[in-house]
Structures are given as structure tokens and as C-alpha cells.
Image (cartoon, rainbow, N blue to C red; front, side, top):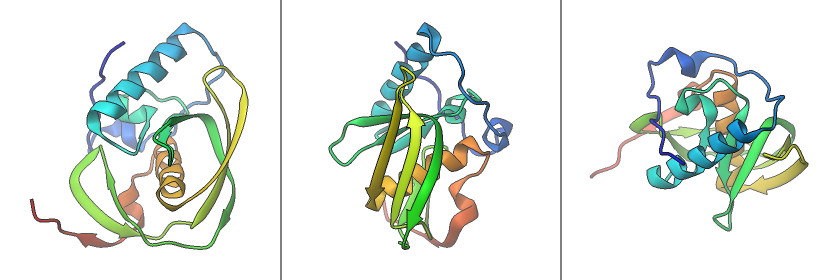
Amino acid sequence: MAIRNIVKEGDEVLAKVCRPVTVFDDRLHTLVQDMKETLAKANGAGLAAPQVGVLKRLALVVDDDDSVLVLINPVIVETEGEQCPTEGCLSVPGVWGKTRRPAKVTVEAVDENGKPVRYTRTGIVAVCFCHEIDHLDGHLYREHVTEYVLFDD
């Protein structure tokens, strides 16, 4: 497997809508494994396929127990409440901002083997569901920022 380059803000791939995944083959499994390794190396909370230059509806989210949820063709089916987290993005390094996101999110998707999955999460994982699915639709978290946050190094 391989560590892939993470595309940075300004690359047009981040503004495009991704295509649904229809083939569950070795190429898809390789992409999922590469993305897992890339996410781990970057120490991120999530990673979407367009962030590695691939226009497929595939995202990874680190769950509360540090396992990685594979979301293929994900759809948010229910939200509840509101939270105002500080978000960042591997494609927008060093920039953090306060956003408004649902407090609780339910996502339906399929895993890398085509098996249907449904996850309901709160807190940072709920934020990540929204953030990564936004990437699949060509949107960056900056569109949700209400106030930028500065951190001292």
C-alpha cells in the first residue's frame, strides 16, 4: 500500500462533485487501504477520496474508539441539535474555524465490501461525517466557518 499526497485548497478537484462507487474490486480495496495509511500518517480525523485526487464517493472517519469507518456512497439521513466545534482540514493546513454542525448525525452508506452500514454518532465524529460528506459534494468546511481561530505554535 502507499501514502498518497493530500490535495490542498485551490486544487479544482476539491470543488467537484464525486461519482458514486459502483464497482467493489481490488482497486477500491487498494484505495481504501492507501487512504487509511494516508489518514494515519497525517493524524487526521477523516479523509475523503477527493482529498487524494480521486473523484469517488468514499470517505473515512475515525470513530470514538479510534477504529476507521469506511463510508462509500454515504448519505446523511437524520440530524439532531447543534454544536459549534472548531474545525480544521488536512487540505487546508494550519487554518481553524468555528462552525455550526448538527450535534447528532445518522449516516447510511456501504463498506468496502458493499455491505450496508448505518452509524449514528455525536460530538467530533458527527462533525466529521458532515465535513467528509461535504468534500464529496465539492465543498470545504470554510463555507461553514463563523469565526476563524488562531492557535499559538
